[in-house]
Length: 376
Image 1 (tube, rainbow, N blue to C red):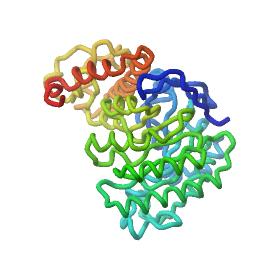
Image 2: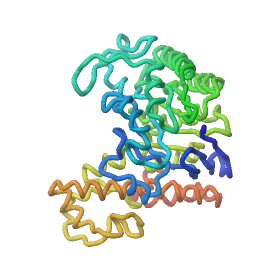
Image 3: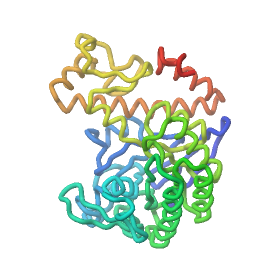
Image 4: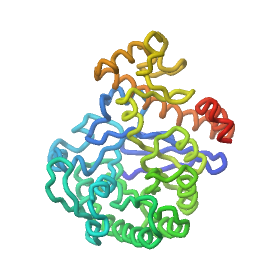
């Protein structure tokens, strides 16, 4: 079936909702862990479930290169292939392709994008049609339209031409989308230009997608610009369909996104930070490799209900990380993913209780510490 979204309550522009999928119904706002190559790095599906994850992501570009969409199709689709019985969203591969395109003006053409494989350097060409066809075979619950993630900063003419091409690509991709059990999301672009964001949102909505994403943020712009990009797009998106802010996983950005009406977030940040020894806490990020944790026999964060915090200490996890033991990265990944999922759980309560702005204030006070007053 196609996904459905029910809007249950609001607090200002923030939305409390329910996303109905082929694999159950899930509350929004939600954070979606990223499993680029059909696995969330170092975590098993069972551990993800214990973190209370719902939708997770996989990446079209990476799975196209290996093992190939035909292998996944023969396995019975992505869910069976990776043994995950929750909903899966596949991104279009566009972000990776554009980061690999050597000369954007030359390699990004109307038909698609020329680029080289990051694995063996062979020449590849990805089109909107091929991206959708690959995702149809992967059999994810939500597929994404093929778009260009516009770099920042960029001049108006480039942004306008790219935004218009993304709209044409969205139409072409939608025309070949053929998996009846898979929903398709459109992506709003426009860079930092308010008129382009409005134009992109309105034209994308006209195509009647199952949900809508705000793309091209968190690509090097300052926070104020990023939040304005969201503001400039979201007001033109329909109330009865989910809204997804792509590639955003910083706790403060998630809170700001929720306040602006975003329902879904994803990011590789929790597992990437973990592999470098960093952990989210209510009092800001910590680096577990710091010498002060060598004899700290308390959990990563007091009050955290994750597996890592219930069973292990900072001293032990520090030992694992400094000894380059994979288990350390696993424990920090579990904690970081649970931290962000717990954050959205609390945001849902704050929306229901109409205390969202107070929640933000309290969170920032703790998370930023001494920086809080200077940032006010």
